[in-house]
Image 1 (spheres, rainbow, N blue to C red):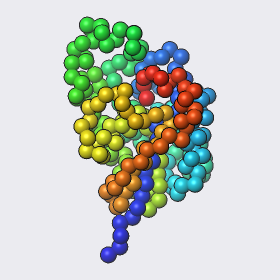
Image 2 (cartoon, one colour):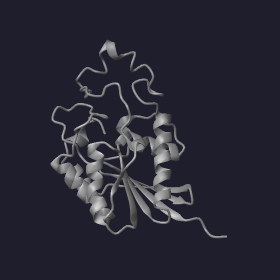
Image 3 (cartoon, rainbow, N blue to C red):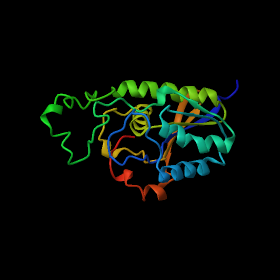
Length: 218
């Protein structure tokens, strides 16, 4: 009986976004990588250059597609698109929700914020986890025996990781281990995840990023 194939799927968070108004951009169109974000994407591509990448797929949002582009170019591949990798839906999309902006203390928003476990202000964590896991498995199948890269967004990636590691899905956003242009890598034997690794190939650039110090969408 043959051994199950070994496949690795790297789930990459996109790089820094140009967002001068500091809004939670969510799924809004026309939010592109900043110049620093483009450098982050190149750093990720350089880190992956020695890997056995045979498939690259990204969320349809511009910042994810732009982050995937240098990786696809490195391996002479096309960037596929998978809507299951998209950012989570959020009631506060298009609004300023930084500390001090008053969004979380405004009584008009209290009903929206009533349930942090589902959560009440956006796409349910379980729904995010299930669609992301389906996208992860699809990428595994596409690159079976090799490696794939999926470019997505902070909350979906972190929710996926917690789902795979069988941890509760609701969490403190300040404690997510999912920096800009970071890699959360899922190692498979057959269709079973046997390990999860994390790395930050653009950490030296993230240190320069104002976006890393705030939560303006992911």
